[in-house]
Length: 163
Image 1 (cartoon, helix red, strand yellow):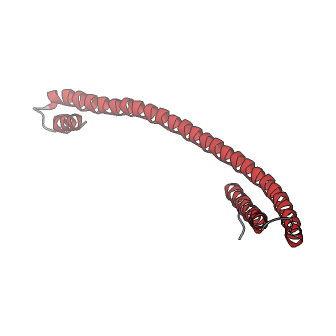
Image 2 (cartoon, helix red, strand yellow):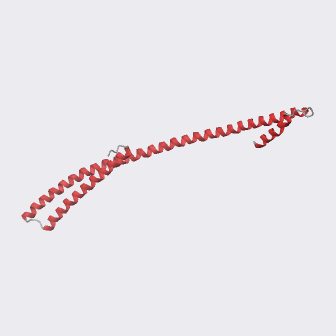
């Protein structure tokens, strides 16, 4: 490109010569200047055209890659939502079971207390029933906590967190 411009400017003086002695060289100067400018323009158009085609192909590929990335993100989010929802449902079922276990442990503790008062069981058996009731309450509280964490995670993924 620089060479073409140098040739064109160098021969421009020949093409523009105004004296009578150099009139025979005007045609040659015009051909050289015109040819180099024409070849320069043609080269820029062709090479830029190839660059343009390549840039368009690259842009199309980038669009396709972006669409694939969006689809992957959607699939990942959907998978996380399904997993969080199943975890939430499982934790709700565990809460119900632990509430039943706590109620049964409370009944056993009350029955054991009555048996202890009557004197049919030892203090060790009575204490074991009390510990079973306490452990049932702790498990129930822990499952309620886990259920709440699952609910929060589900709301977070859904974008419905409200404070």
